[in-house]
Length: 79
Image 1: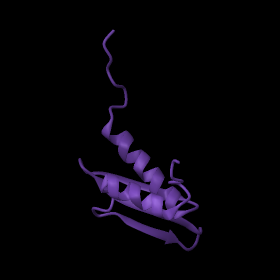
Image 2: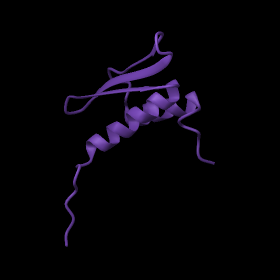
Image 3: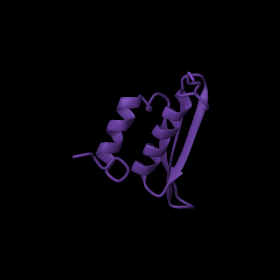
Image 4: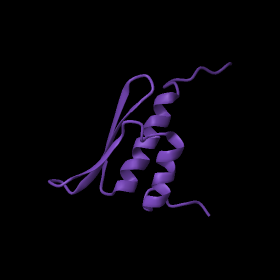
């Protein structure tokens, strides 16, 4: 079965470990909005900041942004 990465904290931490998001990452809770955020810097100096209703979801959103940042926006393909 596929883990519930966006709802299960243990599964979300596995994503953090796999992508090495903890290198300088900060996971916290905004007490005013009752949301969770993750801030990290990925190679190349890009800062990723995500905010979500739960900590696992904030982690998953940051992982998606980190993966997208590594891929070209408009990849070139041979005709």
